[in-house]
Length: 111
Length: 120
Image (cartoon, rainbow over all chains, first blue to last red):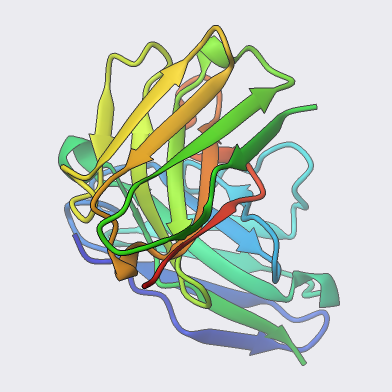
């Protein structure tokens, strides 16, 4: 099972919106609603930002939103802030044989 | 407060073995599925293994199948992964991660990770 494809880096100025794509296949992203997104700061554990494609856990800012179309999921960060800098990973459930597959990761830089 | 604490990492020679532990607290452990996820230094995340709340279902990534064995002891609020026949490519930070409640199918809490280095 190959990793889901994400852009290596995305950048934006404070206050802008950015979108990170996550492209999989009909075996994972395209077949299940269970796409999640994680934020990771250097030296820290990942933090859940979005689950089931578009749901936000309690405590996560509403500046983070998720969507899915076909085999591609997306994470949008609106009103970009300096604290949003970090690495972002998508993850999809992929059925009983593969179970979970992560994306390649995207480094977000706030200019 | 939900906490997951990994331990057992260290330096091991290729072909060697290591057992990692994940101690949970702050929630009703018996009700949650637990996963192991690893991260190669400077690189991305890779799902490694899943164990259901009652140990009825266990899954592994192809890269570790046949070499890693996951188990849990609900009386001790702990999950373990026995790693055998270790290879250089198994070098990574290993995280245990809880699947969220009510079939969330995402990892809502993570430990701080434990580093495994496989090198001669």
